[in-house]
Length: 148
Image 1 (cartoon, helix red, strand yellow):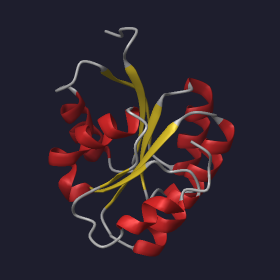
Image 2: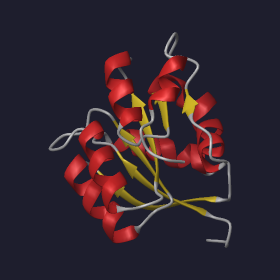
Image 3: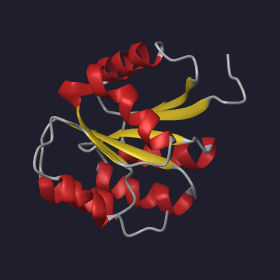
C-alpha cells in the first residue's frame, strides 16, 4: 500500500534471487515501495523513464548496458531521481565514475542486509552514502559533478 510519504523504488539487477532478497529487506520499512524491476541496463533506463521512481537501486554489472552507463542515462532522463549502486566487486575507479555521473550512493552487496536501508534513508535525506565495506574511498564523495 502506497502512502504519500512512500519512496517509490525501481530495482535493477540481472539476478532474480537478488531482486527477491532486496524485496525482503524493503519489507522491513513500510515507506518503501518497489514500483518495478529490470533485469538489464537498457530495461532499467526504459522503466525509469516510464515509472519515474524516486530511487533506482541498480547493479554495477548489468548486462546490455552496465550500471555506470545506466546511471548517466537515467540521471539525464529522470530529473531528481536518486541512484544507488550495489556491487560485488569494489573498484575505486568505477565508484568514482559512478559518483561523478550522478550516483548518490554505492554499497557492497555483501553488506546489503546491514546497510541497504541505512543507505536509502541517507540518500532520501539528501546525503551521499558509501558502504562501510568499501574502505579508503571516502574522498570520492566530493566527486559528484551535479548540483545538489
